[in-house]
Image (cartoon, rainbow, N blue to C red):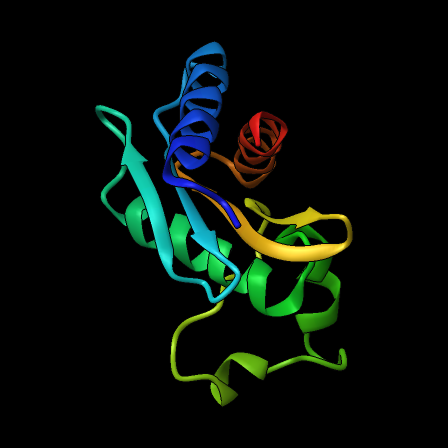
Length: 131
């Protein structure tokens, strides 16, 4: 499981990376059921990033994959095109969500929003490293 203390540490690491990049991000950490453990929105981060960070984390939990790796499978004609129509809550198939695995077992995910997709993934990677 991911403790609140660990989630806060991950958020702090992600925020430091965001400051290096000069972008205000929102970072969410969820458990294996995609329930929020902790989230933080940097000063000046886009309001939409609150939702996108959590949705990216949720998507990463449900597919047990980084959201950047899911982009090709949801394109028109791909196997999971329109999969989001089959779920009650929204999904996000853009970089920024990364699952947290311990000994091969899913324990949660980190989701980041607020910057360009590649930077969201970079910040999520920094947050994950702190876990």
